[in-house]
Structure formats: structure tokens, C-alpha cells
Image (cartoon, one colour):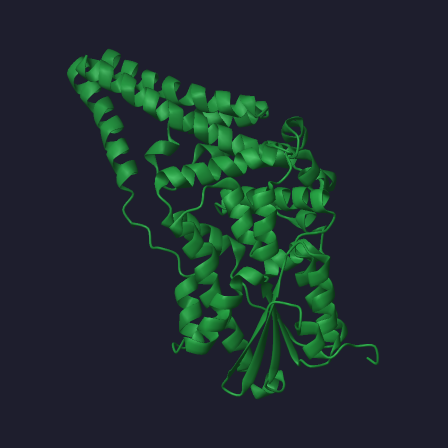
Length: 410
């Protein structure tokens, strides 16, 4: 500790803000997520001995990704598919691929200063609080605020981002030096929008300020109440978080619950109801008015129009024959049921028949950087199976609907 720099000297040339509230002094240290200088500033700030608690702009999932490279290999992919988290898993994979490109281009792991803050605090037995919102919640809330076209661009951009290996543009790198990892990551895949900024930056300013206030109210059984809190955050959050720490009066628990809530979807699946009514009603009308021949013709047209594109999508993903058969059988049925998806069923069969091994998970981030790797890696191929089968089924629904209209009213 004799070589430690005084905290005033550490902060002198670093963006920071100090807020005192309710007997606690919060020192917000603004960092650049791709800067060795920020790593050194974090190390020196904690080594100064001026703080009894450290808070970091991370959630448990992102910390695990930074500190445990083998975590991906322990993932239960079947459970991910069954619980409907396939798209979220793909989004996280896209963000990881983007950050890897940054690391290779700049020679430093994005978020290295956040990882250093956790390691330094733990070495000194200081309490560590992860104050950022779960990245999955942020992605879902951002997606819910976007229009359907912006959601399509975001999803499509992320899929494209998994295939390309281009250098990250100078503008995005500058954002990382000045601001926030998630902001830069999202803007890589979708054009800037007020809704995206509100969810990715402004909401998280409020959320992290509330989490800081929560962390400062420690029950006696959990240890002494922190009086000096160091919060290591991206520089883009500095002004917003300082303002919310000073001005917010709502209870932090209520604020956190509000910012973790997802927009409630309609309990009534109107599109599925309308589609099922039209398709099943068309079959019934065909059997009633035209007998078995007309009814069977309508039924066969729907099965072939939806089943074949779904099976083709699965085949393009180089699915197992059983997966392709599942896609063909499921595609005519799942659009008529709100809780089923042909891509989910086909991907589950693919994961069961061709269970990914440890090597597939460990090679995943490398393999998805090149288009051939998507068909070579079993994990990536299951993702392709899910998306391409779903896409094929969606195309088939429009084709099948058009054929039914033509046969019913032609």
C-alpha cells in the first residue's frame, strides 16, 4: 500500500463525479471500455484504500462472460430452445462476436477495466455490487420500444454481424472511448433512434443509480453500511447517473422493479386466431360445399405450401433428416397454435440427434466469424435450423394463404 497513489491524484485526470447522499459518498469513475489508461485508473483508485465498497457497470451474465471463458461450454442448449430464449442467445452471441472483433482490432478486451475492478476489490475483500440491468432485459425492453421495421433491422443486423469479420468503424470506437459498451454494440446493428437511446442509456442511468442507493442500505447482518462507494461506469453514464443520484426521490426498489418490467403482451393471440379461423374455416367450407375431393385438395395445398418451405429452410441449415421431417410435419400445424413454433421443434430434434459437444461450444465464437463455420459447428447449425425453418414456415404461411384464397374465391 506504500506505493498506492492518493485518491485525489488518481481522479485528477479522470472523468468523475462525487455525490453525497444519506450519509454515503458515491464516487463515480467514468471509464473508456477500450482504454488501458482506464484499467490503470481503476486499479489505482481501489488500491488507494479510500473505498469500502465497489460497484461495477456489469450484470452477472456479462461478468461471467468476461471472467469465465468456459461458461459457454456448460450451457444447456436444449433448455435454451425449450424456454424460448433462442433469439436472445443469438443476440448475445452477436454482441460477443462484435466485442471479439474490437479486442482483435484494438489489442484490449472491451470491458477490461470492469473486470479489473471486480478482481481488485475481491483481492482486498471489499464488497462488490453488480449494478447494471441484465443484458437480456435491456435487449427485450429495447426491442419492445422499436417499431416492427426497426426490430427487423436490429435482428437482421445482428445476424449479419455474426457472419462478417470487418473492422469496427472509427465512429463506434470513439463512442466506446466516450460512452457505453451496449450503446456501441446496439448501434452496430441498428441505426440510432430515440427509443434505443432511452432504453440502452437513459433507463440504465436511472437503474444503476437506484441499484447504488440499494447497495448503500446494507442490513446489519450483511456487514457495515458502506460510507465510501466507488462506482466504475462507462463515461457516457457519468452525468445521467450523478443527476439521478442527487434528484431521484422514489424508493430504489420501486424504481428497479419498474425498469425491470417488460411491456405486457396481449393475452389474446389475435393473429393466430384470425389465421386459424381462416384456414380451418376454409377447410370446413371446402368439405361442406365440395365434398371430400375439394376439402382434401385445400388441405393438401396448405400442407405442401407450408411444409415444403419449412423443410427447405431446415435442409439449407443442413439439418438431420429427422429434423427436416419434423420441420415438414410441424410447419402446417404450428402457425395455427400460439404456443408452438416449427423452428423450435426442428431445432430441438436437431439438438437431440446431434448433441453439441464441449469442442463445439468452445469453438463457437471462432466458427461464427466465417460463414462456413455456421454449417460446421453443431451449436451454430442448430441456431441456423431454428431461424431458417421459422423463416421457411413464415413464407409458407403467406404462400398457403394465397393458395387457399385462390381456390376458395377463384
